[in-house]
Length: 579
Image 1 (cartoon, one colour):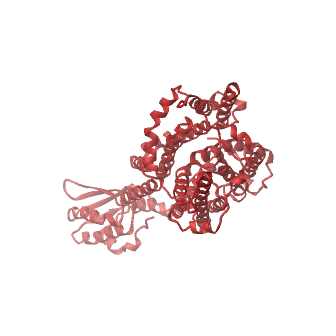
Image 2 (cartoon, one colour):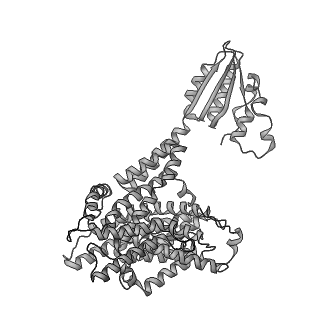
Image 3 (cartoon, one colour):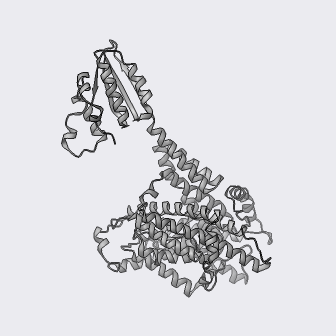
């Protein structure tokens, strides 16, 4: 991970204070963002112009208001499943009241789908703005890392298996239902591979496959084989350029496009793809698919954005993220994207890390990258029509596999098998059902694990041979849920014995358990027994060490002996507070 050594005072400097560094960084981010924007649009099944518009808004608008100055926003792979489902549902929902046919029917169906998408994205943006105003930015981060990483891995798998067919230009389109679509796409992968080795001109995909392989080779090998002075050039763009050069040369030599290879179809004026809202858009916001889609987009986009912002903060020493401001800025961007029916946006780690590692110092680099996108699509959009779809499919396959981070799996497995189980459950449910169900299952399992942890108290009672002393070891969390278990162990203490309670392995104790110990001590005193508690150890573990008096004593060696007479004098309210 590259860490830029930036002074904290950068927050007080103007955005032009480091304009040279920001200018150069913005060019790199632009080169990274361009193929990714187009690739995500192809994966979702919409015109690339809708993703490019999102990238422009993410740079020019969100870049100005962002709470994370070095984070770059735009269309992201993390929203792939939700957006694709919305587009599919929007097309399927069109009723064709005018009995249109041919191209008119296709155009009307697409316009209806885009209005559904726009309404959902607008709603998501509104939710984000409200959440930012209510200062809920930090709460969107209160999700188990296992769930977030599992969500991204599940999305990555879905992207990879769907775009594998695009990489080969094989006709096996997503059917709009995540479970059956994923199964179908997995089942038809062998067929797609076999067609790559067929030279039957009516079914051959070997040239398209070769185009995808060339692009993939660029993505994988460029960072390691390229001369150091050229490594600033993004691998994603290198792969796309190599694949485009291959198809262009083949087209020139054969005077026709290679069999099985399809190119992008980008309009000369991308703003012709803008779908402005109408009064019907307000009605669409009441539809279940829009309400559910908008809320899911808001949840996933917010969580992904704020986690990305946290990761970006770890890459530099400049101003820290203001999470509520960042959430509101994302909401502004998504409202604008919804108004023009563009793809939703999030903070994107690939572009953001490229921004930081390229030397960006202020938000100017993010703003300029949006300007370069705007200039490019306004001046030379026809260049995009030379790009083969298979190259962008390869880019998304590569991106999908990178979302399945093997290092994350190893870390979760070595740290906590329970967290690893939540990760795999989330992945499996996302791939086999849909994104929302998978995330909800992951959150539910995390809650169950948390409840188990805070209700799981392990006890062990050792009694001396002469039954004059006993040691009660407590391990885990002692809460009111565990009162029956703790009381049962106390009942086994011999009458008149001296009981030592070991708090060393205790992670949490609440007032109810302390109250039980004090009450038991009073009763135990009637038979000549006593209770020994290490109050200093307990106080030191569960109370902030903000004063020397709270840490006086030397641990277990200087344990405070609470004889039953003293226990009678000490009320439960005087027991150390737990946190």
